[in-house]
Length: 208
Image (cartoon, rainbow, N blue to C red):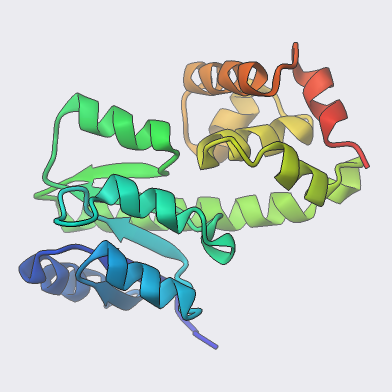
């Protein structure tokens, strides 16, 4: 049993791994993986972190591929993933957010900013786990929810979960630390992907 939250850092650069461990080990237990393959091996062995920091530009298996393979591991599907990378283009940031990552932090980073973002996403993850546990209270079947939303990104699933509980866009934005406009766009993507006309039809998909 771990008394502190665990962060898995995945980066092919040993210097960056050492730096990340030094910075965040004051507050968190740190797991290190020098490649996507090493990270997947740890996860398959049952070493499940509370949050993952993932580089993009890695040989053999880049961050995008690693992200997709991590999301195929059931115990890790709800673990927040933050891309921590030297790729600073708008396209790179948009790509990781569209994949369903919870955040994007560019290198070099300021320690205080990194720690604040880690805490923010960990707190958000805890709230989402609590919300998931409350789905049954509003008549939502958790197994049906997981089945119906299997083709959505993690961000879309988080938003769909809150819509199912009756939250509006502004409330969801406040819960997930997004803008209301972004939540509206995500909701539209959800409706399109699940072929429903709006909130009521969406909730009906998840009813017990």
